[in-house]
Length: 118
Image: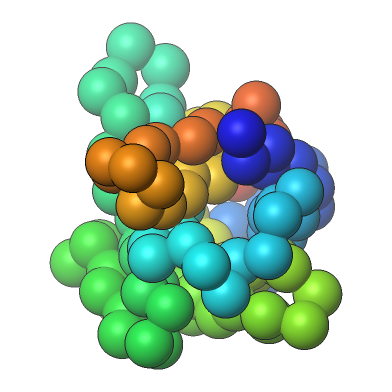
């Protein structure tokens, strides 16, 4: 059972930056893919960015150029650097992990709130 703990959320003004982190209870070297999702009020959860254990990354069109996902295998963490934040980026950000362990398994963190407002 992989446990994920997010941190780094908060309130920021439009145009500002935040850095989210997700700490895994297990070595992320063995986790195929880790990702950030977000969910705005009354909206469906959507993929923000993902990174595979080989370093392949993918971003939602709405965050390309502004956000950067990275992983630190030594610290068992992934991060999401968010620049140029917009009110539309407001939501709860969730860390996600997909690992193959006698079948594909998916894990979620508890989420961290990001609010972009003046």
